[in-house]
Image 1 (tube, rainbow, N blue to C red):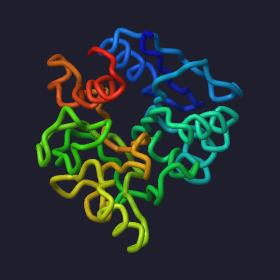
Image 2: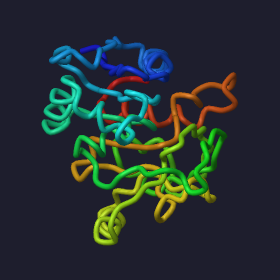
Image 3: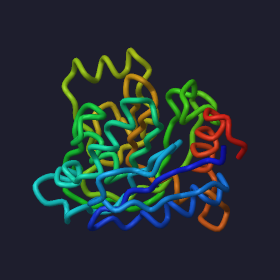
Image 4: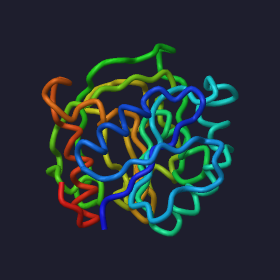
Length: 226
């Protein structure tokens, strides 16, 4: 069966097309563009992506209103039955607000928007999303966010560390995130939220290909040729 993905668009999303192009280019599969007001997802999806942007203008809290959009009920149900879900930047914020990932994304330390390439360390390469990386590999991925400061209580942070659920860590200070966390998995390993944008680093014309391995890892894990 051909690879089937969906990219969710919320009012204020601005990376949805970038994400869809990256997925289609790397997978060669079908990428459905799904509006946040839809109540149902396309059938037989392998992968769902929540892209970056500023859904609903980041009112209340970043991702809080998007997490209550009609389509998110379907996304949560899909994630809970094992469909692979990636949330990038605003998508990560939506995943925490929807309860699919623990913790919260707060205002950056220094109260500044951060937009630049940043070095990351791959913390766990034994996961669906990271199998094409090496453990401890240092990669470069762009960030562009104002509310990327990851926060969770000490018990949650210890659990994430102990269960190998920290996917990526910043190799330098970026936004004040606790324990320099840049991305985390859910307990089942089929949901990843991360602030950096892998879809913006998939070919040399973008300055590098370090993000490409994330999408290739997903395809490998789902037995789809990349």
